[in-house]
Image (cartoon, rainbow, N blue to C red; front, side, top):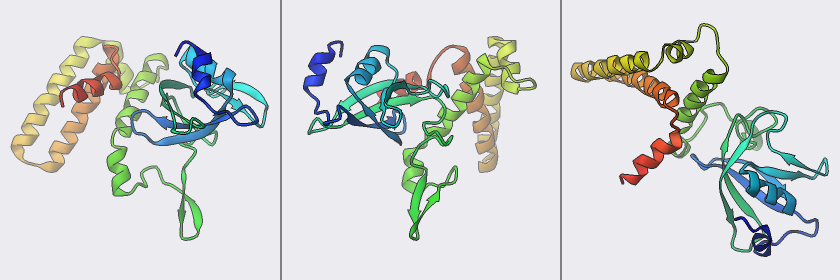
Length: 222
């Protein structure tokens, strides 16, 4: 991907010099937005690993997140069969939409009009497909606490106390999961497993791991 000229030969840009780009969350495959690139935007995106687009309204190159901080870190770039569209999978920081929504496609057609989706207004298939979203949200919140300390935050308390305190809590929560399972109470098991997952996520962040690394390890065991 270092030779932009060879890449451009594979693409069919429109008469305006632009090619449409569909942007997806690399973990959930949720469509985040549709934008346009020219050759310069594509070159910048490949060079930096961060999504750059061409703004048709402002007639200029722009880095996604340059004003909001909601950057898109590119994980893969694919070309369609005709070479006239791109699919980019990204790690999205914050919301992709200028409205503050995570995706620009936050309105569904229902009973003849478009209705905004509620935060967890998914059908059964979407819930299955997007099951990792809550983990990503939790990871991002914990990671944000590292750089943006929030007074009174339990997460910041754990991070400040360090690895020994975090490991102690992981051990305690593991024991509580075992006890809940022995008690055979689904409500208790659910609650204690959620506690354990949270503390494991704090450990993941504190040790400098990413969710992608954990998911890759799980995939490698299939």
